[in-house]
Length: 110
Image 1 (cartoon, one colour):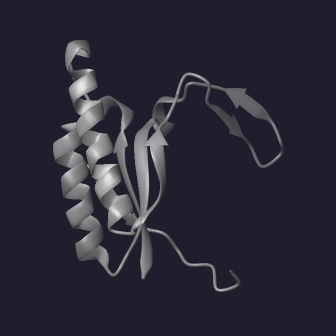
Image 2 (cartoon, rainbow, N blue to C red):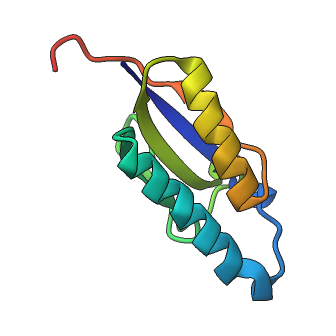
């Protein structure tokens, strides 16, 4: 099994406000399906207005930061990339925007 990050950019999800409840319901249905399948690890929407960047010297710069605008994400534990992409396709339909799929590096010490 491998863990994958499925995510979308904050600007990608352009939905009229009156349709947000329908999109939320559809996205939660995919989450429930992933939980039922035993592949769900964690996920959610991201609040960008309260973001900050912490530099290597400890300097904190308040956001939001346009180059780091993650809209939402899911982490799934699946057999392979094809399965992760299948879940990403489900989220793409539910959220009405393309999803980025990245494999998370395993930690051999955990």
